[in-house]
Each structure stands twice: as structure tokens, then as C-alpha cells.
Length: 387
Image 1 (cartoon, rainbow, N blue to C red):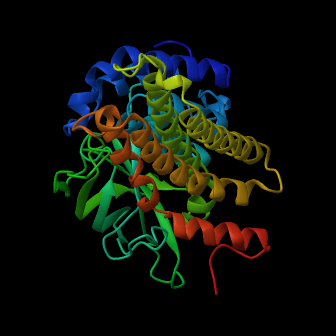
Image 2 (spheres, one colour):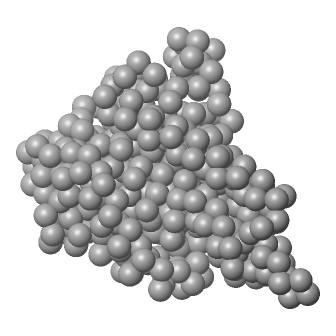
């Protein structure tokens, strides 16, 4: 494995090279619903497996900024690959937040060595977008724990080596509403996978439903302490997830802008010979799209830097970033398709794929509506949750 990158620019460069050399030739296959094993393997081999882990634990130590930059580099080529790697990065951040010595030896060392892929299993069919309120139960079973429940939309489902699972706390005396996180290995008996992913877009992410029936894990698979799940969700999962997704969808928006720019630059009217790039109205419309992408990019990277620094505006910045990117990716791709015309509208054009992929941004929890509310609450100095 290549040594981890030492800068955000280097991480982005490596991701870009892999996106072009490995992911791009497989885009059609990935978009048909095949999980992108080869680019994910290449990213691990390139020293990016521990992207979200601190340098003290063998990772890159590049934080939210690194996750956003790698997400953008991958998203410009293949959004499914960006999402799959992004969820691995979020899971890595959770495991690296409070690892025990055994968790580091058994899981985290393999992650940073590029030998282990992890992901999140938080969402459930019964709680919808409120992914922080699990119903999956964890009960004490001898010296270990038993897990029973159902998870939905598990990215990398059935392909990851481990899953960060949220549960109701195991302690029978725990107060109502106290939740925990536990790390479940992929080969745990009682973990089964159902319903192949058939989304409109993001077709390669293997976002599947998991059933956990009498799954047994040791007590050392508990992440942090019992009741830590809310801390993990809002201190680790939320910032890393928001930046991974913001970067990925920013990449989609940039790819759509690139398609429109290239089209206008190379096309000309056959009857006049006049190039589309010389038409003032098209110049005007392309200029608007360029400005929308660039101001959204500035928000994303400012939010990442503010989050890494623990700045006072990190919370509203992070929540606003994904919401703004969701709007940007859909609007820019839609307008790019209009600029390109019928060529962009044809089945399986790059813009057709970008539009399908971009549309997922609004509905991936935290949804855009939730994030707008959280941004407002943060600006008002109010807690994100509560009346």
C-alpha cells in the first residue's frame, strides 16, 4: 500500500487519478447496478483507506477537508463510487473517535492499511429520515451482546467488512431514548441481506436492507460507552457525512458544468458555421451556472475548514453546505441539459446519469428540509433537536 497522503491537495490528486483511470472505464457498468469494487480497492491501495482517521492512529489526519476534496474528485467521474467511499470514510471516523486497543488492532489498523472497508447502518424503515432514533435492540447476552432489528439503505450493503450499527442501549436500566453504536463484522451469524438496490440514480452503491436476527458480538464491539450514539451521530457522523456528501454532489455539479462548457465550445450551427460559444445568451447562462458552482464550492470548503478548526460557525456551515450542494447539483445539471439540448436528453448521456444521481441529494437523510431547519436553529443558538 502507498503511504497516506500528507495534504488535501495530494489526497485529491490521487483520488482524481483513480477516478479517471479506474472508475471512468467502469461508469456504465457501475450505473447498471454493479458495486464499484475496483475503484474502491484502488483507493485503498493508494493510501486513502484511512482518509478520515487521525494521523495518530495511522490515518491521513486530513479531516473534513480531505473527505470533501476526495468526494468531489470521485463525484466528478462516478457518483456511486464517491458515495460508497464516502460512507466508508464516515464509518472510519466513527471507529476512530474512541477506539479501544482491541478495536484498533482488529479493525482500525486494517482500515488504514487498506485491507478493510466499513460503512454505516443507521437508517431504519420505521423511523424514516430520523436516522438518529434507532429501534434496533441490543440486549446483554452472557458476556456479550445480542442485536435484533432491521436497517435500511445500507450503502456498501453485503460488500463491506464491518458495519457501524445504531441500537437501543443494552442496559435494562438505561433511560428511555438512550442509544448505542456497535461494530458488527460482515460474517456475523444472523446478519442477512435483502432487496437488491434499484434506485433511480446512485445505482452502484448497493444500498440494501439488512436484517439482524440474534446477531451475537462481544462486549468489545461496543463503540464508546453505552448511550454514546447521539454523541457519535452529531459529533462525528453528521459532520463527516455532510462533508462526504457535499463533496460528492459538488463533483456531480462540476461534471455537469464541464459537459455544458465542452458542448458549447465544440458545437457550431451547420447552416451558419457560427459556434455556440459565441452566442451571448448562452454565454450568459453558462456564466450563471459557473457562479453557482463556484460559490457553492466556497461554502463547502469553508464549512469543512471551519469544522476542522472547531470554529463558531461550523454547525450552520456544515448543515447549510449539503443543502446548498443538493440544490446546486440538481439545478446546474438540469440547466446544463437544457443548454446541451437533445444530445444531453438522450438515454444514457452523461447528463442523464448526473441528473439521476444528483436527485438523491435531497432525500438522503439528513434531508434538505431537515438541514434547512437545523441551519436556522443553529443560527438562532437553539439545539438541533427539540421543540
